[in-house]
Image 1 (cartoon, rainbow, N blue to C red):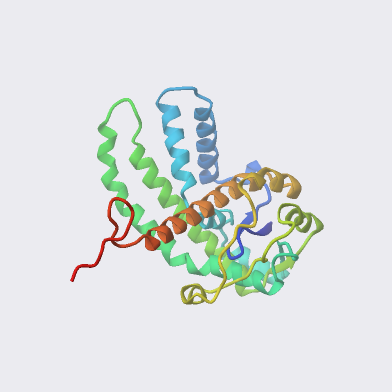
Image 2 (cartoon, rainbow, N blue to C red; image 1 turned 90 degrees about the horizontal axis):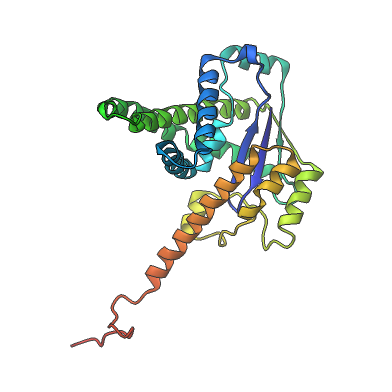
Length: 282
């Protein structure tokens, strides 16, 4: 198991866990259901028309909006007491691959800790909320022809939040027992030299209070949306392509929203149709 820490902006980083392939004989029922669902979804994507094509089209749009931090936590496998005891006894160390030319080694555990601990309560609350919502979707099963899509969506979100919660627990355990080893490689450093040859600033870990107080500089993008395939190829981790593409898209949407809000605040509060400010009346 390897953990990748890849800065997206001067403040945000993508964390992804590359797990070892599980032998078929060791796959659980949940693993088999997940694989079956993935295969069915991939098959539906090949359809040119029909309700299956519509489902995957709108479904992919919804999946695109799930926070990349949640996807990152879901990439961590669930753990258990026996496995944790074995890892502590063996002093297992998991490599955390990061670009040392863009990220300080001291910031690596800070980024991992923020991901593991700040979102834990959020995923628990939303997991419970999704479970509560499931019974309300059952009546939709009475609609003929198409499956109960509201039920499947809410059930999926419950599973997704549960996986993220278990992933945060596992990452928290790794941090608590110092079972990680920050390492940098020529591949990951050359990757950032290629896509960010002349960055104004490198990645900097900042707290929420620093951002709110205006003590930090403007956040800037480090990886572009078109870099996802090259990054996955250079690091030899195909799964990273979709993860990076989604994460960069979300960051760009966030930047666009911030700019729109800033423009609204800069508009004059009172203007006449010609764009000139109204004269103040006594």
